[in-house]
Amino acid sequence: MPLALLVKCWVLLLCTGCSGSDTPRPIITAPKPPQDLNWAFETTPVWADEFTYNGLPDPNKWDYDIGGSGWGNNELQYYTNSASNASVANGLLTITARKESREGKDYTSARLVTRNKGDFLYGRFEIKAKLPTGKGTWPAIWMLHTDWAYGNWPKSGEIDIMEHVGYDQNKVHMSVHTEAYHHSIGTQKTATKIIPTASSDFHVYRLDWTPYAVRGYMDDLLVFEFRNEGKGYSVWPFDKRFHLLLNIAVGGDWGGAQGIDPDIYPQTMEVEYVRVYKMVEK
Image (cartoon, rainbow, N blue to C red; front, side, top):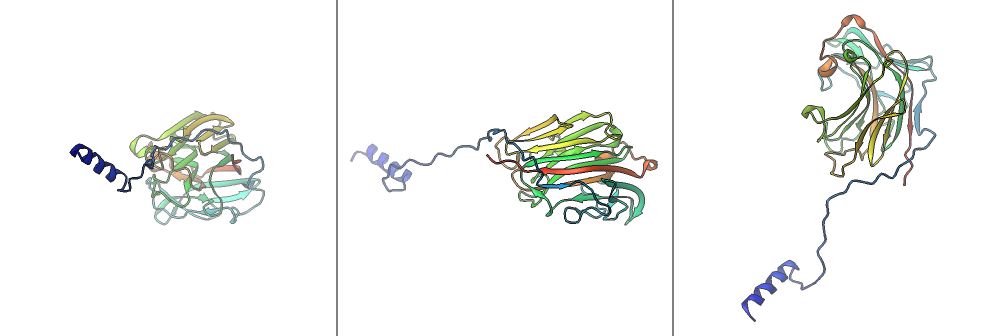
């Protein structure tokens, strides 16, 4: 056999595992972004709190994050599970930040969570709320990964349905944070809207979350859209279950960036309802 033909045969045998098979090798393609299937949402909530009772928040729906660790942002409050910081009456949930000493901190507040009592993958989330005001306040309505499947923040993601800092009154923010896009490296994806009555009237903050995109609305006006690029969890960790959080932080890297006015407290965020609607599968 000619040498050239022998070499060619040897190469072919290596490529086919010495079987001589002409079975084609699999073609590996890069993941592709999903298509927007224009998902709809059910009209009856799958999970809701209308706050039509009195006392502490419903323990079947809400839990608390407790402590004064700074929460990764050098915040100044101690979060409690006390009725003085979170209570329900007159059809409203009221979260109150107070200037009072607790466990070495000069302020108290509350951070309510639905973790393991309301965890969701996709859906429509509506929260009607009235925000606090004043330098140093940092209220938020947001979502975190329940199981941290992709690792610690920001790898497992964060969705901010509403965020506000009191020194920049009436500018309301919507954001997402992922490993590729987050504020620590200046790549976070954010949109803002001026709401002149953010702290004097109730407004509806809404998230529509589908496999294609995270879309944020304020009073039914589309403000923010973050699309799934199909590049894996570093960009899109939003394919696992998340839970809701409601809180008022005091000070911190962002909330306290222009100082804190200690004379404005107590300050409240009032919530008229929280409603979650299931996405209709296609």
